[in-house]
Image 1 (cartoon, helix red, strand yellow):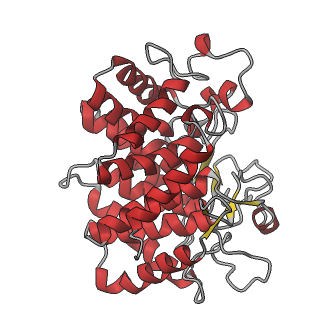
Image 2 (tube, one colour):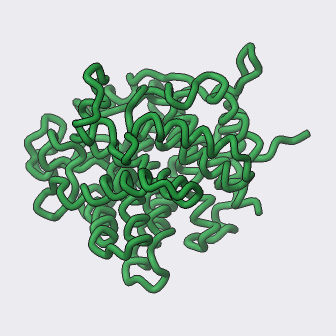
Length: 379
């Protein structure tokens, strides 16, 4: 019997649940986007199936990284364990450690436990004090002065507009939208329509161009984060908001550009998006899943036409499914996932020499998100 996209999403959830108790998801003990992207995929599976085991697994993870009153390990230092890992002890400095707060709303709505609302407010209100460059663009880390990374649109954007939607906080909503616009102004390449991974306003980083401040490469997963972020931000903005038209165009233009770099054989995308003819470049699964999610969701939301991109979506999804394998236990294996990646030197060699790993949370999370969205796309 043919497996549906939702069926594949459940196989990926099952694999992770077989291998990890929720509290042990790596990096253990951290309120971090690795777990956040995977569990946001699982949360979508819960919405589609109603199966409480997914809700319970998410709850187990969140309860392992927040205190009884909603204090966040690594962010509220008074409850951070003394033997905490680097990820936990450095959480207050990292934009990446805010993303999992998108999981907290459903937990609060279904349980009514105030600790979840307290944690939501701790993260969302901290964005008022996050360091920014001269254009009010969020630094990616507190230690990275004036640096914006494309990933940041996903790490901070959806949580900000979700909070604004719930509490009427127009300031955080407008700040989230402005991050997308700043990135379009400074990080979009006019020739390709693609986006560079980083922009250093000070132009002092070794990787930054001394005239533009830009890093040198179009990294696949960062572009995927941005494409997903714009769509997820749009979910929580009123249809009559003046920014909607521009956000829709940003998304549509990026999807139009990405068609040019879809691999003809597999339907997927490369680690370094534009270097499709380089022999040492490689097909990367997580970015391919995020980009496929973006096409499917943009069609579903009416941002782009289905007849224009149906073949792109079908080919990409088929290629990703064809790339799957199964281990000796019968669990699904999602391979060729780039390990977590900073800009570092920003060179082509830096990206293509990153380790390829199996069943990494980046890849599994992106895969589940894509499958859930494909289920909705297919009706």
